[in-house]
Length: 299
Image 1 (spheres, helix red, strand yellow):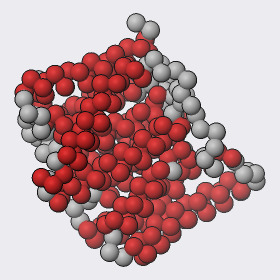
Image 2 (cartoon, helix red, strand yellow; image 1 turned 90 degrees about the horizontal axis):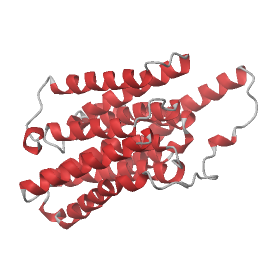
Image 3 (tube, helix red, strand yellow; image 1 turned 180 degrees about the vertical axis):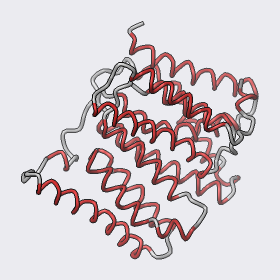
């Protein structure tokens, strides 16, 4: 199976995965017809589908099927069918930000900083728990930009445009009081039920092993590979911060980790020393995700 997934994907691969994703989303939501559920479902599908294109822009997985397959399996395992609109928007905005920051055209990346700021502000207003994503973008600008202050100004300007517009509209509709949810640095959600997460221990161990292996072989990697992997690790840390602080028992937050986990795990499997280790690792990840999914059906 690993050999099959290690083959290079073609122009038809991503549409096939997206069609499978569409069928899965429809199957989970076939009996839900409320307006909010429809909007959330559409945004969720758009965000997850856009995530497939992020693999090629980041360029760490050599355009193989393996990361696409793992990403699809993570989505299947973590998608509950009735996703909160905040997480749905976060998935969509995260994909937009990654596509923008990893675009090959440097001029386009510079001109898109205002847009990135606006997206971050929208993301925060819909789901304040995603504030670590803003830290990720700030670190990316500081590390990569030659004109840090200018780009920080553009980022802030884009965010202010959305924030001012939003609060102006809210004030016009009679919302004159401050919502404490916009200050998400208190009342963190503590997970009190760990039995379902225990099934994900193999996935967590593989992720730790992958990061450890990366730093153990850091000097052997090319400068481009080091930079891109660091980008993914910082992005992963931002998503993991949101998951740890705010997930509680709402496991749909794990969807935020689907994209970076797929990239990291697929690279670990690809550079494994022996074929049986690669196959075993792949089947352990799949079995772990299936076991986690089955817990929701009380089997």
